[in-house]
Image 1: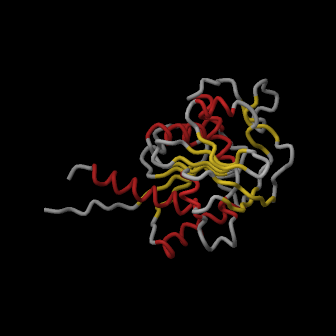
Image 2: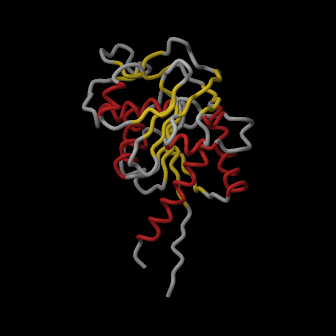
Image 3: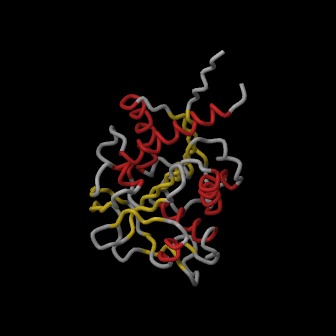
Length: 245
């Protein structure tokens, strides 16, 4: 007997949900638009940063989206969610603070840079991976040049895009070490500053300093969000196929 192994994809939205964070208020509408425009159904659960400290919390999901809204109440929780998604092959999207913490997790747990810190969380640390930007990107819009052949280029469908930001922190040092350990920086601004990171060989691991949630009026999912949804649905399909009959 042939059985239908299709299942609804479950996505963990990791972050401290707040009505004062515009990207948070837009996400429910984006998820609805994914259904209406693309037929991509995601069953979304908000996971507060403290709740993500237990690494098993996100392990059963088909995608993890580490959303903006820093400082997180628990840096450890955000990092644990990213690490679980990276090691377990769960599709991951990190936006704004999610991008910053994806780099921080990789530096500490893959590159052995155990003392690197985020200036927003630990401003007096001796080795800051994430520092205040020379020019704040709060409420800023700018060009991002995307590397051909990258996951980012495949998702966005172009080698040039204009994106919106709402952040004041970004990566500064140790970038060559992260590259040497396999992380790819696939998007840069017009001054060559890193704006997108991805992990080749992972089913879907993408992080953007810009906020795709802020694209347009919120009625059309950004291509990066759509790409995450497709990856989540694919993950759910494979996971359903692996379950015993």
